[in-house]
Image 1 (cartoon, rainbow, N blue to C red):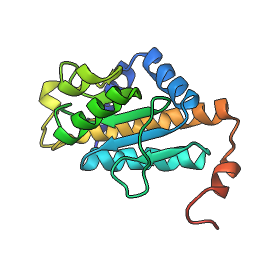
Image 2 (spheres, helix red, strand yellow):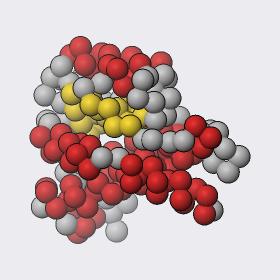
Image 3 (tube, rainbow, N blue to C red):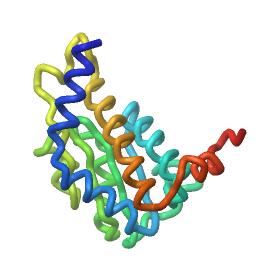
Image 4 (tube, rainbow, N blue to C red):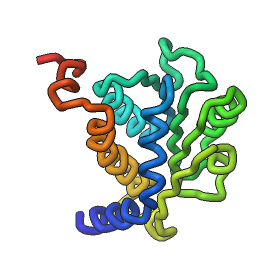
Length: 175
């Protein structure tokens, strides 16, 4: 447990503050926000999408049947540890060609995904942590991305003037 906790903490602290601020500003300034990742990265993206919807933002997960077409006034957030996942890279290429601002979250700064993105937020994960027995198959990347997104939520709430009570009213299980 300490291993995972310490590695994720180190990665989050390695992300430059201007990357945090840039993503928050982009989220607030764009008409619609599209999120996509494959596998567990996609699940992390869906979790963040739910929070943004609860804050009243227009958010869609790429691939859902009700997702509209990405436009030039929109933001596309893509998540891939390796930055090589074909569906994620193709989504980046299409979104960028349309004119959407593409932000990628990846652990590979020299990846195809980072190269086709307008903004690449790089999670600096040690090579020996990539497939550790204590954190297999990208666990540190996925956990760190989730933590990064959850750290952004309070700043977004403040800038959007949204309270927890406001978010509760938009909660899927309204109680």
